[in-house]
Image (cartoon, rainbow, N blue to C red; front, side, top):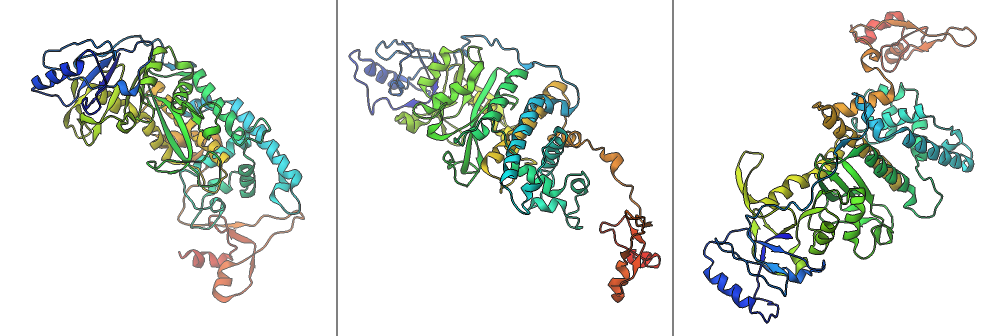
Length: 528
């Protein structure tokens, strides 16, 4: 049984009928005095076959009228009819594992040691291949295998780049006062080493000429791990997002209405908390899972995965919604609610619900009874129930994308599969954050959560490691060399004022440049 919001002009293209039901509907129209803005029709599908052309608008009076029409399988319905409850939700939402109470525990639950080990093994394999082909003074000549501690340090620095935005990676290691990021050059990871690990970053476990194999493992790992540790809430949402990519790639997509119009299309299944449960990177028409004909149906059924026959309620937009798909979802005990594309239906609308624009919707769960809703400003509006439910739940994927835009560490200069890997790592940390908030019920911000994870990955005590500030800098002795000779450094003040090469055994350890200075030049150099 479907609830359809919106009516079409029945008499522009009437369907031939020997029962005279069109004449009967004309009589109903003549006696209809108080039309509502939202019109509902209920349809029963026989043999799971119903074409879009069978979607005829059914009008109703103040006293519900029911006329059976055997030829079309329609019955006249009432928009105030209660929402359907054909099957119960049988899932047990929540975490399936016991975790600690620290943010990094939730991050490690999503990105486990298995993920770290595979990432390290594939990165080392690729780094060694680069080394075998490197010659001369190429950076890859210095390649050494990455350990798990070094990979954690690398990821910690990479995530931190999302908080401190600089145009080039090399700028993070500059000691110039305009850039000054001591966390990078004091963490025992040189700039060249960081860039070499980034260049070698890889998760391809199977040698193949197919581009998609470069990211297949981490996509499968994410989907399997999320199902292993978490079961979603009853209400699910399917939507797509775009990851910016303007380079050459067979399955690069163009979507006119998106913020990033050119890029890689990522389909996502999320629950009402915004937690991404399953994702799929669209591989174009050659995608063996969702490509080709019936693309939309394949996407929806693939993303539902292990969540079929559990009584979930699915919300989708007009890219996915159709009567045929809703019937298939109902057959696997999944409710569906979504907006309809009236151009795709090829039927002219005459009476539809309109707020800012005309909306047509289809649901096998919610009715079209008008209910009161409040917006962010506290204003009360009347909406059909199915529209109110759709608006309430569809925002979860958009909210996830919004959080992904905060403190993003993706770099434009990276090749596409490295961007996908980093994008997946960012989805993992967003999921960890949402799981932490739902489980611990601590109202922590994403900013503080990510900083806590970064500190744990860096194994760095910021509060104890930061030097005490002092208004007065004191001279320090230069260390001795291997032959026990005292080092000397040119006095910066003598050179600045008189261009004299005065060698001094003292320097200022508190200044960023660590300048050599004579004892008598300290006050003048520091201007106190």
